[in-house]
Image 1 (cartoon, rainbow, N blue to C red):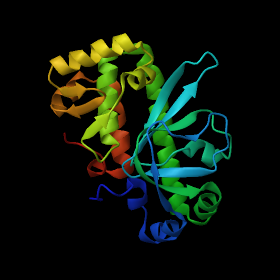
Image 2 (cartoon, rainbow, N blue to C red; image 1 turned 90 degrees about the horizontal axis):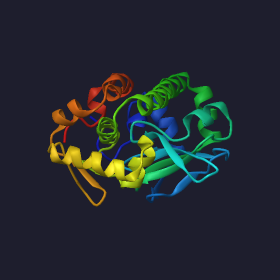
Image 3 (cartoon, one colour; image 1 turned 180 degrees about the horizontal axis):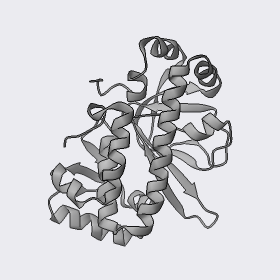
Image 4 (cartoon, rainbow, N blue to C red; image 1 turned 30 degrees about the vertical axis):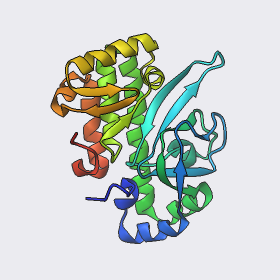
Length: 239
């Protein structure tokens, strides 16, 4: 099993592909709320998170914003616009600070063209992220707020090597498209059910099976696709 200091996408590459990629990488520290790609901008670099996490955020002219995806140590940021060589239709920001590998899109694209195995894995991850975005749209339209919060906590834990998560109420509201007061009450419900400990934006799962039971069907539908990309041991499955 890869160490927590590794990115799972890189760790899962064939040795010769990983060896070709690693000289292109540089390690960086990213801070919470740091924007790495503005909405509408060209993607010039992609980040392979180690223990940092990123979010795709769609911002509207009236100032409202909705998070559509979380990117953790399973993959890399800006994958779809990188693959299509198109401006990014959303903002990519760091939702939990930490370490990441970064690489310029030109060298990475050239390497993927020369390495079919790398390209295949990039396409498989693109499929996973497309499924996540589609599931999020359906989830926000159909499922109760507490169920959706349980889903996102599980998702964030699955995409992080860390047991402690950081979710401010404003961010949870962006993720699920609800008012902050609604999010506060829903999170309190989960805390009263003793499936999470939650204080001042710090979340720790204390009853993983209970939280899975509280989550909507979306987490259960997407988890096998995530496991198929990296294997069940590649994501967090404990508290």
